[in-house]
Length: 138
Length: 318
Image 1 (cartoon, rainbow over the protein chains, first blue to last red):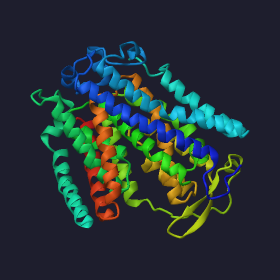
Image 2 (image 1 turned 60 degrees about the vertical axis):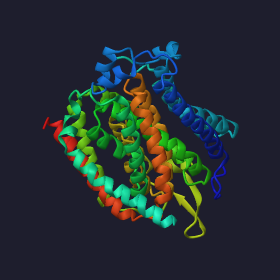
Image 3 (image 1 turned 120 degrees about the vertical axis):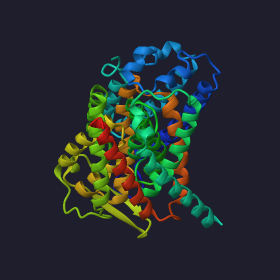
Image 4 (image 1 turned 180 degrees about the horizontal axis):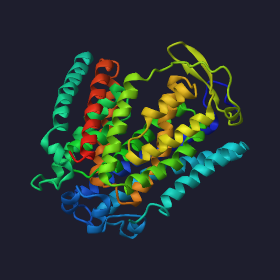
């Protein structure tokens, strides 16, 4: 343990390093994906106008009306502009998982059993949420 | 010169705030739950959302609140989007902000990884259930509970005391087992501050509630994380604020997945909000030393109260 000095410990620095690069890349991907979407550089699975005319509806109603991405069904349609933009947001949501995996590895190497378990449990919770086992569909 | 620019920005933000208040109570805003007229092109809404989020980002930083807590009640009042998509975008806004702020806070040793991981594990589980509940309940119930929560948050902001360096006589057993303690360099005092926490089990229970509410309303949860870290657990204020940002990035991730899988995140709404808010927070951080944060804070609390009461009225179908 090296908590007791004013400098952040190794695990914290590794997390910060991974987070910096993952989030910087994330912001770039999100903006680029959106540009592809709104400037219609790729075909769209649902036209922007159609989405905009119905965004007052609830998520369940809108998804009944149009094949918008839910669960992981969208992956095969990634070459559509709207799906690509959605995928960029998915990447942003996965950023924390990547950081936690990196820090779990550091804790494991430091033989810090408690925090290896906590970090891995946290990864499991997020992967469970990401899997769509609960929450996907209507 | 810089000061004059700061003043100009401040006046611009101030000029915008009464407008927001008016819009919150306008007929157009009340009609948000109804099918909107189609004559407005989609891109006008997208640009308006970007500009609005930009100003919201400035105000949020200057007032010392998270963007998410302002975003959801105000955007759901002003824009013709269903509350499901506003909450989905609100979570993404809070998540993007927390991700971009997290790295420097960890490097400086202000955010504490062990404190955050211990609280986030339990909070992230409850935020998943909160998100599921939020998307399953009828809109009017969510409006009503959102309104009550926003009013409650405004009252917390008005009344909650803060303690720069809380007294912790002795750390509790659980925090000792988890090695939750630290030292950070306090720039204002030019010395290292040694800190430890107590009442860890109570803190864990409170994070269950906070996680649930964050997931349910897509609000982010800095408004609740900071008082719990600071006043309940006894962490120094700066450590509490920084660690709160870090916890947000984990808990919001868990809830965001539920919204993504339910199709409640529309890039057309989420991306301009993220981009506008992030740009705004950067400008806001520059203005922080030049504007009267206390006055901005009063205006933000007033806005929250207005938006909260509006949501309550909407919840009752008024």
